[in-house]
Length: 422
Image (cartoon, rainbow, N blue to C red; front, side):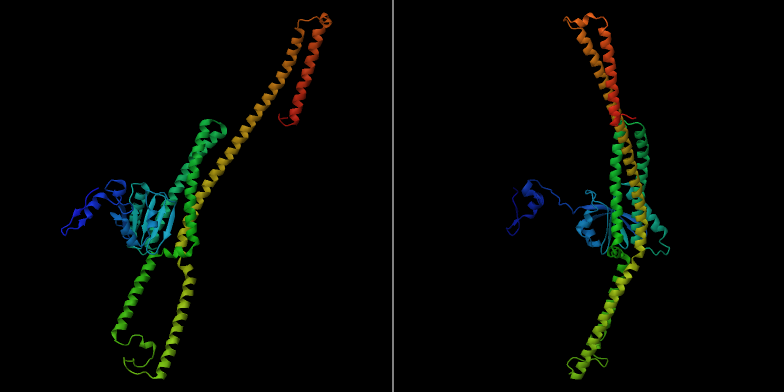
């Protein structure tokens, strides 16, 4: 174990040893252990004017600037695999859709830097759209533009994968229906596994959009620009009120007591004036309460109207992704129908094999009868029946007729049992 350094005042200094040992050095016996979760990652920052640049940001800075908890940033970590999610927070929208993982604020977008084609396409397309429309009046806020492009690229990519998978599976299924072989069965098995995985991904994106559309509160949280403007307006209003209150010393809150001259400190107040002031204060408080209650009711009733813009945006891509899911469901039904057809063909082949086996069993029984007759006449013992030269012919004739009758009885019995086709 390293010895601690001695400082100038004679006290041991553990900082150098602790720096060499690390946070887990005493336990594992090695140094240089780095704390996980605090390292910097590469992000692509895109502002509302379409300017993009690559930054190295640590987790703590992003959490502080965007007011996000650690569990939300965990969704964006490329080391973990999480299902698709769209989360509305106080100052940001956290988006995890397929390969696009980003944080959308009211003025900028932070995209997890990656060499994936979807990320590069998102960056290029968003910059082009923002630079094209920066001088034009657009009712759509910045955060909805970034969110719309995320949904568009995700839904388009999933739909393209569904079309490609359908173009691969249908010829294989047609070939399997005409020729059942081990190679075709293996190809269908792999294609069915790919179809199941793609269906689960499309279903998760669809469920996430549907869940977001069903919750008005979550959609209201995503109006980041509007919330920022309200916050800035309330701050400016509070500052104006503070300026008015501090303009005349000693007049603060006295306007609620009387409309006459302000009451200076130390001036005696008559009981009538105090009663009138209390009555006016109570009436003003009741007016404020009624107005606040009316404002809350008005806000609740108009909240539905305020989120129509986002709801229409989500509904368009919900219809798109639902159509993709319907195509995948139709493809799965086509696979199930092909499997049913294959099972019917296999059952028919099995029935033919059983039929051939029964015919072979009946022929073997007939041949056994002739073998018994030949064995009997080939025995070495004396009998009077052997002296008649026509005995063998009669026995052979009787055996043949008996075998024929037995064989046709077999056929009639199994036809009644519907083993053989009529």
